[in-house]
Image (cartoon, rainbow, N blue to C red; front, side):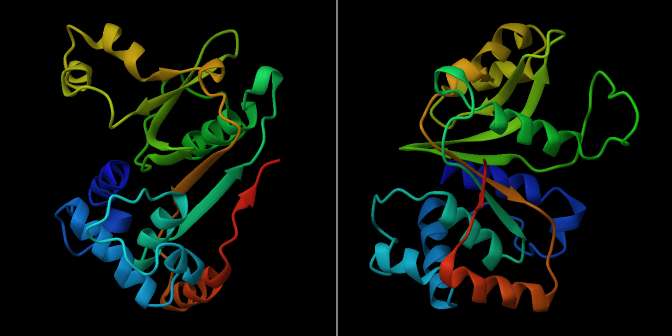
Length: 220
């Protein structure tokens, strides 16, 4: 729930999405649960609705990538689920996940040119799900030797630690809190949810129809 709040807060500040997100407030958790139930009643993800017996509000049930997709679709945002269903590197690591995230954040750079040292984008964060927990990917770093690390905001982190990211005096120390290298991400399976623009009315109806059997992009 907290990661969806962060994603929605970001979308509300991006012109592409602000036009369809008429409510500029970030909903509380009970309201998010109600929004998911409303989306189910619209016909989105009937399998997921059945799994939760059509009811989330007032429960402590965990939600995951499919519910985030349902929320985005119901709000008029094109969602995309990417399923990294097995490790693709040594010792159970997921280098393909890091490659995908790099491509996502570098997409605004002109092809055929050397990438600048720092790329700033207006892209929303990525929702990252693994067994029992989710986090928000807000960026990626790549070192001179090619090693990459994800910049992850974790709603389980202390507020004091996150506040240090806003202070120039503590930024170098605080960055350690959000850096995650391939060796730190060794769960068997990960899923990403990306917001990818605003669909037309026809596309949204197609999304609702296709969500009767949700399909993710599987890598590899």
